[in-house]
Amino acid sequence: MPAGQVPGRLLPALAAALDGSGPAIAPIDPALPEPRLREVLRMLAPAVIETADGVRPTPGPAGPGVAPGVAVVVTTSGSTGEPKGVQLTAGALLHSARASLERIGARPGERWLCPLPVSHISGLGICVRSLVSGTEPVVPERFDPAGSDRAWRDCAHVSLVPTQLRRLLAAGTDLSAFATILLGGAAAPAALLEAARAAGARVVTTYGMSETCGGCVYDGEPLAGVRVRTSASGVIELGGPVLFAGYHGNPRATEAVLADGWFVTSDVGEVDGHGRLRVHGRADEVINTGGEKVAPAAVVAALEGCPGIGEAVVVGVPDPQWGERVTAVVVPTDPERPPRLADVRSWVRRRLPAYAAPRALVLVREVPLLRSGKPDREAVRSLARGHAAVREQSSTRSVTR
Image 1 (cartoon, rainbow, N blue to C red):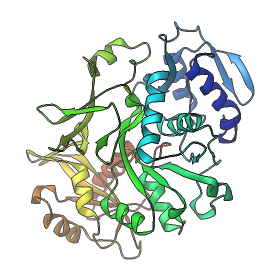
Image 2: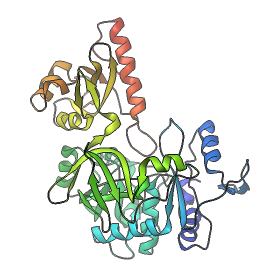
Image 3: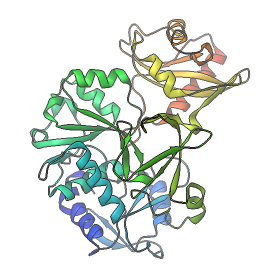
Image 4: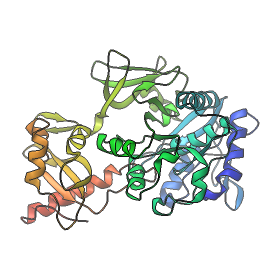
């Protein structure tokens, strides 16, 4: 459905799913390509489909439905791989919303701005918190930092991803108007947080995923009832009343990540002596270069403040000599005077071991994003691989896309 129909149509359906008076719902991104949409519908096998044009039967046979208590099925994001439906119970969603509102000190009746897709847990979570608060969220048709709608001024709270926060800062938006900015979906660079807080923003960083009803760790501290631990290899595991009830129709995938009340994430990190969680990045994104392990998030953090760099994403690219080549995909602050690879390497080597310094630099006008607002790492890798192919054929140091 169009964003404008969320308050009038999705919100009542969500409320009915949460109190049990209506069926479970599965919000689907209306911008999905047709082949991907067919994959998602086959996986969900819903009884009916509701669109802006009304309700119609599913094109294929309806599936067995969901387990008792499941209110929402959220399709995992991403444009590749087999889609999975994350089953969330009403109890988990409501606990998450109440714990979030309590942590930030939100009062009943305070409104939320929802600039994130409601087909993702980030946007859907705003809707659940709004219902618990007794309000309707403000859902803009599109996120436009330069032309902020006056309705935004009625909102006390908002959830954003780092790219959106960066663009609001660049547009000169008065961030102090929000009592709370929940920031999640990707690692937040320290320089971005400092700039936002200097501009008067009250930013709370969040960590979580669809399987935990969204953010369940705020500023490193778990929400009420949430448990956090790490395995011997540093993999983050989460427990508590916010956990999902398994993947829809996929018990094998469920058993691979859910056991004894703990969800095994794909992230690595550490819990300090005060119980605060530090996330180092995804385990499957670690770059193995010359036998050394490099966490992309650590390199991105090291690049903060590097002259000439506005935004950066770091990925590994196959390399016959090193196994993987550390590659920085960068948006220059001034396209006419882009950073040089030698200077970038020198900057990182003063902050991290030499093997972590990027061996390739790719210049782009903007970082490719998913609909959720997170960097599209597969698209970034494609750019980096394309740069590697160009470099093999010429002496070109970098390419601009």
